[in-house]
Length: 524
Image (spheres, rainbow, N blue to C red):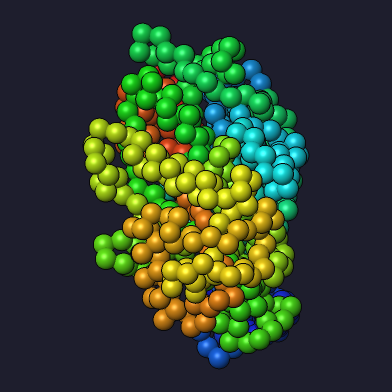
């Protein structure tokens, strides 16, 4: 055999970890000599729970020689020292910003990353303040700070946007910075919010080691524009930082950035997003539904689900499902209630949660053609209204799932992972009726798709509202620059071009290459 051969095999949980068994079964499946010195390697792993019992499906490559050369690449070996190279300012130290910075190290340009928040270690203090004391720091929270929202939101690495960039390049770079190599083969890879901070800080160390810069507590408050040309940014209202190109990778919750662009009469657009609640079930219940067994055992991970349906002309769907996870407060300003989900690497919480949201479109609002903030303002109004039905802390209004559908106040509430606490409220009344009615209808449909989902053991917590940016920052198709300001490059989730860690990271890489083309074409 001169070339690698790929076969598909299936094994029960536990046996999927036995290398010799995998090798023997793969070679037999391929019809090859079992006594040969062929090497085998699992290149894809997924769980199939459609049968009576769940099984692992493995894609195994049988190699006659060593691993293909491209899989032995270490990108670190190709990074250049950029200390004295041309500089690019990157606003935002999330996956879009950091992976743009890593791409610049490959391309030979100096990234200067500015973030309004704190590094991952200092950021934890502000997360504790939100969780335990209800104090929201508008610059350092679950959305803002090193690593962005993804750092403390499970670290799910699957995406439907693989065509937008080099998916495996991102995964390999994460492994080089401390992620387990399992993410290279799992069908639904994730890292875990306990491990992501170390990986994120390792990426920062790499950027700085090769001559780039990362600055925290650097809140970009203005753009420097002279004679229609971008010259740099103003930080913390007084400090000017100059560069011929600026990447805006500020995340989906940086409302001040959209207002800044609007102040400068730069085009922005209202964009569809989704809004609803986070629904939490006992993980054991989800396991029994998905795996058809009361106890999944040690060789099966906490099970997940993905649900979607149509209610009238609106899509309703589960979002950011966190098996074995926690519900966390994700407000970015005082006076609002926003919740999200996260999981640690072991996904060993007794709860499973998922956002359950309704699509919201700009055309639903009067005057949307002239007002780019109609969706953002609606989002903020709902979050503030939910807060007004609380006790002034980050305790969230909640309702049993069955009571939510029936329109009834819950006399008591089941246990929850949400540390700030929950308050028994009529969530169905607090949310706009256009949202509540569609959620109720969808829950009935979800029960038909996943028997046991509709239960009084589940809790509905408001509000899940930061699913994506409600504003889009346009960019030209070819140059990827803002159409009104050469040198300004909208990027990632905050600009409306990504939805999660992987797609944001790939967009960051893509924008970095676009910046280099801009410099070359303008002799910068």
